[in-house]
Image (cartoon, rainbow, N blue to C red; front, side, top):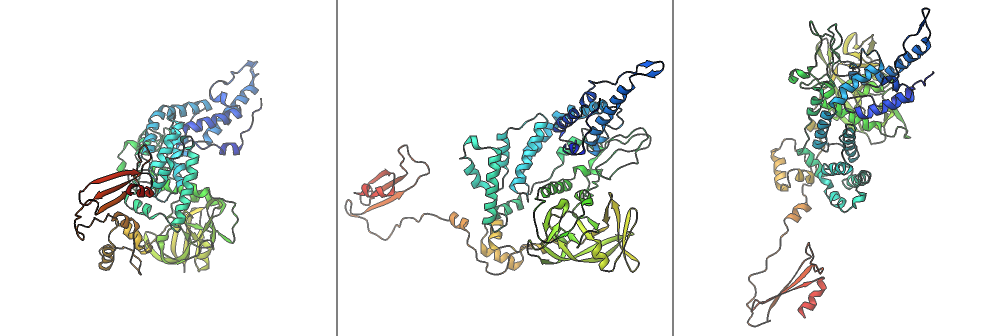
Amino acid sequence: MAIAVPLVGEVRHIAKLNLLNWGSWRYGISILLERNRLFRVTLRQELRPAEILNDGVVENQNLIDDWDQKDVDARMIIYCNIEPQIQVLVEGSRTAADMWDRLILQFAQAAAANANLLLSKFTNYRYEKGNNVLSHVNRVRTMAEELRNLNSAVSEQQVVMKILATLPPSYRPFLSAWRNVPPAEQTIDNLTTRLVGEEIMSIERNGGEADPVDTAFFATHTPQITNRTDQGLAARGYRGGYSRGRSGRGGVRGRGIHHNYGGRRGGQYHDSSNENQSQVICFNCDQPGHKAFHCPEKRSEERKQARDDRFNKNRSVGKSFGAVSSSETYGLMAQRPSHWLADSGATHHMTEQRSFFTTYREIPPGTWKVNGIGGVVLSALGIGTVEVTALVDGKPVFGKLNEVLHVPGIGPSLFSIGCATAAGMDVYFSDTKVALSVNQNTVIFGHRIGEALYHLQISANKRDDSANAAKLKMGTVHQRFAHLNCKDIVRMKRTDAVKDLGLEDGDLSFSCEACIFGKIHRTPFPTEGHEKATGVCELVHGDVGGPTHVSTFDDFKYYSLLKDDYTNYTDVKLIRRKNEVVDHIM
């Protein structure tokens, strides 16, 4: 019986199995297998037919061949929908049913432990600096969905409260307004719509910049990135090193092209989660204490890339310059922003790192377009010079890159081969290496990564961040120093008491409404200036108070007070409006 051939497009619609999506992946792959009539083979509900011999000839060979083809198709679908570091778990399986049993044994039994770790991650999550409210809401909803996949569902009300509780300080008025929304309308979709509107008004109110209150908050409350959750998951055998057969070859370590094939003498490579984590070096950031798939820098870059991919790729724009060829897109997405990659399709050298520049000239936003990763249209904000250091045969070679474009969101820095050849450099490509030379002297060297990318052994000479910092207004500095007296701020700038204060020159006077409001006080009644009254009602003092925060049961919010100066007799009357004071006096 013929079966439906699985389409490539169908496979791509299912996210590959990773550490956290077992529940959703199992549901999606089950549908795909059922659609192709392969799920019964995977569950051992349809077994391989036994051979029926007749005079040495297998009479049911067609049925056996059909079953074998189904099993191969099922194994292909399962294997192609698993992340590379998890494919090791199913390698060596002879049937699709064996693959399925191994995955269930590995993932289903640890679901409860993973749910506890993910719940801890959900509880400790904080608003990340640089995010907008939409990405913040999506991050919380993603974690809630991961918990739901592990049968540890979080209610919609809990998700809403988590989003509200982790908003920056500038959203405090919004929280007060949200309490007045009817409970039936306090949904995630309604909250997201209102938060986006509030963010747009805040940006317009602050001239396109972040609210100064949030800037000061993040300056003193930078969240610490922790790997405890992911290290706990790795310790349970999901990721890291996996045993690879009997020949002593080591297991996959990290991700991508980083492997350890050396093994260990006389045995297999064991998971390094049982070793001292301080001796582990990350292949991504070269820092000790974690592996590449635990790297916080890499995860931050992946989140940023995911936001970039959501841009409108079909947006009509004016003249633009290509930066990345389509064949290199997926390779570039995995690189660090500080890496320099040789790109024959780039018209200019490009980087998103503002700190790389030694000279810088701004470009009006929207006047210079660049086609970034995945066809996303980006804007160049400046152009200048970047000083770099190349490593050739272990020796540093210093140089400069002229007319480098500053393109936020471009990802890894791009070295234009066209600009290099136009400047008189010779470029030599070999099987796995690239060399750039001037007058037969190699000045830049690199090696190939992936199929079409070349990583150059150069790094930018970073300047002190304070040299590139924008000048601050007196109001911003005043708030960051907890509303310090402006005269003291001027004195600190004049005497250099604070390094790189960054206060702009000009008029340093500033009027803070919050300080004025905090210093308001009631003027005391004069104790001198008039003589004591000598008779009743000769001198009567009056005062009106209110409105009070809480009115009486009869809706009285004000009071009128009259006091005779001679006898000290006092009369107080509750009133609803100030104009009723006349009735009290008369």
